[in-house]
Length: 150
Image (cartoon, rainbow, N blue to C red; front, side):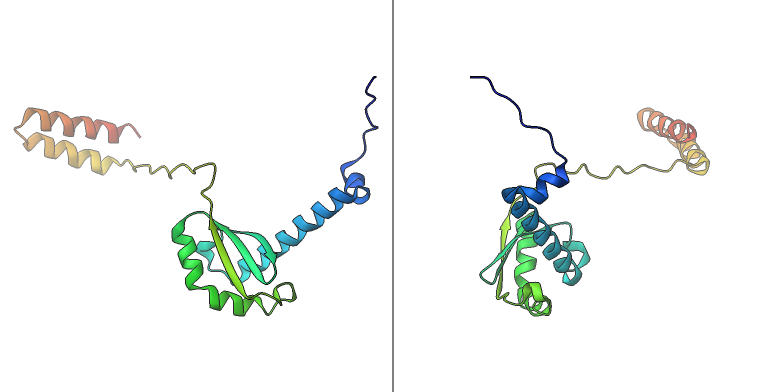
């Protein structure tokens, strides 16, 4: 019994003709639309921490990154429900449930670079001249040299 592969088809053609893919694509579009509408009423800081999971039976389910944002969303629930009900997609909305799901990939903390200046190097070198402790004097001179490098 040999396997014969199906003929390859364009992705757009598959989405239009395959009923399962068509339904899945329609649901993905609907969730994307709900996310856009939610972000219009949500505070800017919360937008990257809250994602729409589903809207079913009047309950909007959100996936949030941590418990802090879940609590903030619960405090804002009445206002959000009231504002979202203005859109036809959210006409049946009665409550919001939050599920905490930390992101799989942690973002690296921002790299803070120290600005180097000739003025700082000169100030450090002048201070080092007046210091009698040899280890502190050497540390200040190294720091001054580091500032002169850039």
